[in-house]
Image 1 (cartoon, helix red, strand yellow):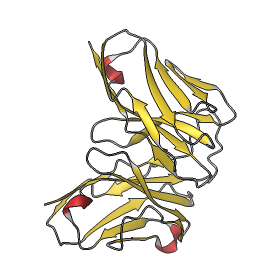
Image 2 (tube, rainbow over the protein chains, first blue to last red):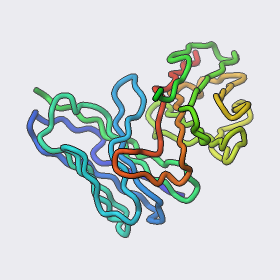
Image 3 (tube, each protein chain N blue to C red):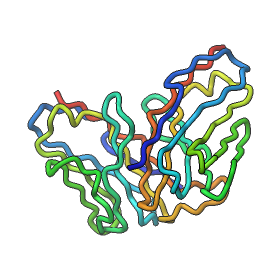
Image 4 (cartoon, rainbow over the protein chains, first blue to last red):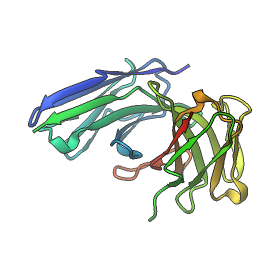
Length: 111
Length: 120
């Protein structure tokens, strides 16, 4: 049974800092891994998707890496801004096409 | 294109009552998924439709939950009778490509904003 863990559960940083969110999963036989963002009262916004054959993906200030063999992914946010404050969720897809989510990291970026 | 729409956005019902949640997927998306997040827990898979057929309902917690997708368009999730532990946020997602093979900038899953269900 796939289990996904995200560390830390909460993070508060001053504006401008670079930060790293961590995700680990127990079953390395994943099809892909997605990072989502959730704002309070809103749905999930997909940020980055990494196929199992890829090592990383980049979008703007975001960079996600994947080390499938060790069951780890990181989301790097450069030059954080108050608008980045949200909950960040990591999810993996196995052969069953369902997403298995981590508990999320609540990020607060202070002006 | 219009996104995934869920209705209602919030629902407060008494224990023992019935509630029906609705999801309208992106037009043309054959795959529709229900997920939920109960307080303090991770988002969990409930079930997966491919058109009008249930592909996987292994995540449905018990027989008080009934999902339908008549005609392969919108879907409903009925909880009858509702219990206190059913409180949480119910998300719907749709996808066109079941293998989620997407290029950068085009992502497989599109989620709705969720329905926050409170059972009192």
